[in-house]
Figure 1 (tube, helix red, strand yellow):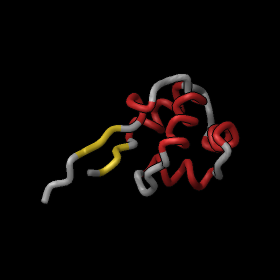
Figure 2: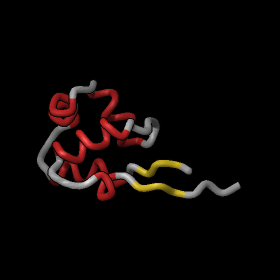
Figure 3: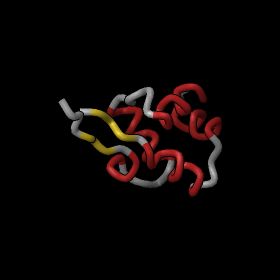
Length: 70
C-alpha cells in the first residue's frame, strides 16, 4: 500500500500556513513537510497526528491509503 498525501498541500494552504510555519508547529524541518506533500515521505503516525492537529483536521482528511497495482 502507498500513502497518498495529495490533500496535505491544499489543506495547509486553506489553513493559511506556510510550509515553514507547519514545520515549526509540528516540530520537523521544512524539508520534511515538502517531502510529505510530494509523497516522497510517509510520516509516522505521531507526525501525521501532529500535522492534522496543527491544521485542525483529521489524519483521514489529509492522508489516505492507495492499493499498489502488482
